[in-house]
Image 1 (cartoon, one colour):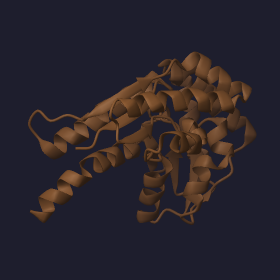
Image 2 (cartoon, one colour; image 1 turned 30 degrees about the vertical axis):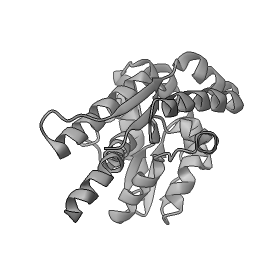
Image 3 (cartoon, helix red, strand yellow; image 1 turned 45 degrees about the vertical axis):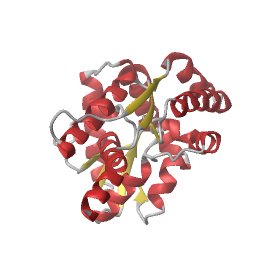
Image 4 (cartoon, helix red, strand yellow; image 1 turned 180 degrees about the vertical axis):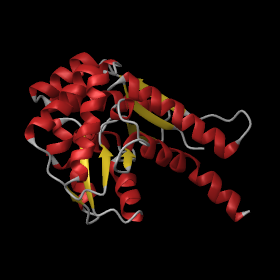
Length: 238
């Protein structure tokens, strides 16, 4: 089993989901008392989020690179960024550490393509919804991302930063998200991508008018595949 480094704390709530899901995935594959080999660097979100909000992405990159270097020093052989928005500085982290990073958008795009999905709604922070660092990798698979009204972008961003990232799930915001997903269905959208690792806290992936793709769960499963790849290849060869 390869050791995986996780940069989390952005937020702690979704990082906890990763920890549980990766360990459950390893245990399901290997059985017995097996669990995942992980090194987690959990950041303090308050100053980190302030840098994001002020547009100080150089500062975001510096903090993330320092965290990634500490994870590498612990023996991690690959990295997982437990946040869609943090992938905005993916390239800086990869260059500074030389470690492979399991990009959150790639397994999501692969799943969408495999399911024949051609048009999706993407929900996340305003950075994720508007910029190319997640959208581009999905669109490279020939998948169209439907436009979302500016007021809806602002409201989803507010829900993430003011509520979900603090571990709070507000009933009115759950209704807002459910309504937005319903409205996206009227735009001939075939599915919705939860492009923020906290959104699954407020969106029931099974109880919506459209299929919902949770990037947290998809990313965690991809991490398990990566961690156990060598072991399973050896077992198959034997």
